[in-house]
Image (cartoon, rainbow, N blue to C red):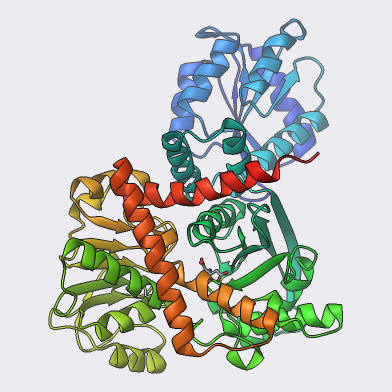
Length: 549
Ligand code: GLU
C-alpha cells in the first residue's frame, strides 16, 4: 500500500447503498481512496484472494451470507485483510460482535458522512499496520511458541504463563538524527524492551538492522531472560534496536544516531537497571558512544551502564570473542557426549561477523576442518579446509567474502545442506525451516544466531538424530562475559584472560550438563530442556517475590 493510495473493496448487494458510499468517498477523499464494488461474499473473497486490496467494507446481509456468519466466513478465508463492517441500525449487536471477533470498526448505514467514512478507513489501516508490523513478527511468534510448548510440558502456572508471554516494559521511540548533509534529517524507530524485572537488572544487546521491530526485539528480550536464567546470571532479559541499515551510515552518522537513541532510552537504562551490550550491527565503538552519552547526562563516568565496550574504557578482556569462544566450548561438550573426536572433523559456519568468525577460528584451533563459511554476499566452500586468517585478509581488502579465491562460491541455502559434523548458523533467524530441515546433514547443530531454527524444523532434526545446541545455550558465552565485565566494573578490578576463560568454561559446561541431564531424564529435546531450565528458575523467583500489591 502506498502511503496516499488505498484500495478499498466494498461488498454490498444493495445498489442504492453502494452508490451512496461511492459518492461519499468521492466527495471526501479526492483521489486517495480507490473503490471497487462487488455484490456477493464469494466474489468478494475471490477478489481479495487475487491481492491488491488494502481494506474491505463488508455489508453483513448479503444473498450468500447472513449476519455475523458473513463476517466469520470472511475472517476465516481472508484473516489478514482489515475489515470495516457495514450495518443497519437494528443490527448493532451483530456489528459489535464482529468487532470483538477482529473487525477493525463498524459503520451504521445512513449515519455515515464522507469524513467519517474516510477517517474510519484510514484509522482501521493504521491499526492493522501497527498490529502486523510490530508485535506480530514471525520471530516473536517463534519465541512465544517455544515458550508455550515448554510451559505446557513443565505444567507452568497459568498466571505466570500469561505474564511471561509478553515483555513487562516496552519503549518505542521515533527520533531524528542528522545525516552528513547537515540539512538532511532522517527519522527512525527505536525500541528498548525489558521482558522480566524480577531477577535483577535487565540485560541484553542493541541491534541495528532494517528489520528490527517491536516483535523482533521482544522475542530477543524473551530469549535473553531464558539465557541469563539458564546460566544462573543475576539478570532478567532485555533487548533494544533501531530499524536502520547501519551499513548505509558514515561513522559520524552512526555516532549521532547512537547518541540520540541513547538519550531517548535514557530513563530505561542504568548500571543497576538495564545494561545494553552489542548485538547485530553494533560493536565496541557503539557501546563507547552509548556509555559516553549516558555519562554526559548524569555528569560522571559510568562504565557499568554498558558491556562489550572497548577494554581501554573498562571493557573486559575476552568479551569481544566470548560468544564464538563459548559456542566452541559447548561444541566440545557435545562432541564428547556423542563420541565425536574434534581433530579432523568438519564444520560449516553460516555468517562471518563477530560470532561466526570467532567460532570458526576457535573450531580450527581445536583441529576442526572448516569446509564452508558465508556472509551476506556469498558462501565459500573448500573440502580441503579454509584458512580463517586468509578469509580475514580478504575481508580487510574487500569488505565482503565475494570473490574469495581459495574455494568455490555457493549459496547460503546450499551451505546449510552440506554434509558436515558441526553446523553453526551464526547469521540471521529463521534459517532452518520445515522446507530445508530434512536436507540438513550434520551431527551437531550449534546455534550462534538467535532463533535460527523453527519449531517444525526442530522436530525433523530430532528425527534425524541431530544434537541441537539451542541458541540460549550455544551463544550464551557473550552475555556471560558481559556479566564478568559488569562485575569487574562494579568492583573496579580486572581479571586476567585466563581467569575469564576458565570461569566462562565452568559456567557453560555446568549449564550444558544440567540441560543434558534434564533432557535425558524427562525425555526432552535439548531446546525444550534448556528452556524449561531457564523458565523454571524465573518462575521460582517470581513466586518467592510474590505479587505487588
Ligand atoms: N547480544 C548478545 C546476546 O544476544 C549479548 C548480550 C549481552 O552481552 O548483554 O546474547
